[in-house]
Image (tube, rainbow, N blue to C red; front, side, top):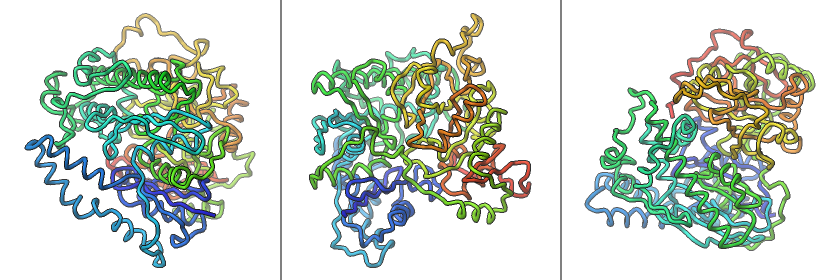
Length: 611
């Protein structure tokens, strides 16, 4: 049996994954263990986890693969600085010592780090380096349910590429076209993330969530920054940007074009201007992605599309591609960002380099993305006792029934069951749950539990068989990566005076039978749930439906703003005691907030660096 360890690290979202004979055994991000969001460091804990889960020592692993090529990345950095000289000397001077000390000699650095896991690990072990965008493309195609697909990847930047088109057939995958740095859709979106006062490589979700509150009135100005061709290819006018050589994303010329300086998140509130900016860049992003999709469908005449790279996490743009019916089928890698590069690099080595046969799974090969840590009942109870928790232990049926009852009474619940998710979305293993029928739930969860902006939307988890009764979509969306509209018979039309409201004032208007998961534009980011992928979660939603007639529950990630999703029972208890969650349901245990020792309460508002 051949084992491959895949690693992504040193930029953001470090992760590790392990394959045995091409099958995905385990995968996890370092941030879940280190408790540092988007942790870019060598993923020591994640590597330890995948080895322990697979019951292997590092010296027993056959091959190790890294998700990108450091020398090519260094070449891009040097060439960029030369091309823009003398601009950018400050950032050049900051970047070089780190590159020369660590990143350029990454093979040595990796070997030294790997040795920490196992003193018997030998330096003659095969360490391979994949191409960054090939890793993304492989993570999208090889686990997908397609024999053949065209693969579109888009992110900030890898070595040189920022956007690629690849064609996958059986166990072969070849990149056909690339757009190169500094022309990048990911960096264009991140420039607006920075401009609206959110954190780059973290706050892009917020920009997307803010967009429906605005109107795309700056679309033409955005298009002064980017020249978009009919086939979706594009070039960014570098005179407006600072990311190639500077320490910020945008420059004075950019600020003059839009008429304001970047928002200072500490001292400036979000205004209608920022909502309109968000709407404008979102619209342009969607236009580029749709044009690219149409062009590659026409050119390659392949009916299946796979997506990966950070831009593939823009579920609104994904939903628009689906709605346009450009492709017959779409599959998106749930860990579409750099974390998924660890998986893609390992799969690329197995299938492309070693020419191993690929068996296509009609669902997909990601096992619902439940690839992380798991705790048995004894481990859960031991951790809860050590933390000083007061808990009640129930039989499975009682646990499901009681939790559904709490949900129907508008209680906010921390839900910790089975294996942790791989990727940025909580999918019913490490989730906070609520009643979608409540018109207070969205605001309460944001302000009292997540400690974040009130406009941030929540996702509905719905039984797959009930999907088309509630939403205008007829394809499976297991990874919460597609947005679709609520069906018209479930909508509550706005009154004339409500239609006149602007921006955030729209937030508190009840606009459907499930207001807690209905965005201001009547859309929702959907997760479909099946018995095959997550029986416990499926049983809970089914019981909630039995009690209420509603097959939908609110699902958001089990964390507070700035914190990675909880990993261990101890993390879950800490988050429970640091928020206004009413109950924690973990394994077969239920914890009621009012029965906990008040001395164990935590102040979570200052615990994590805000994103």
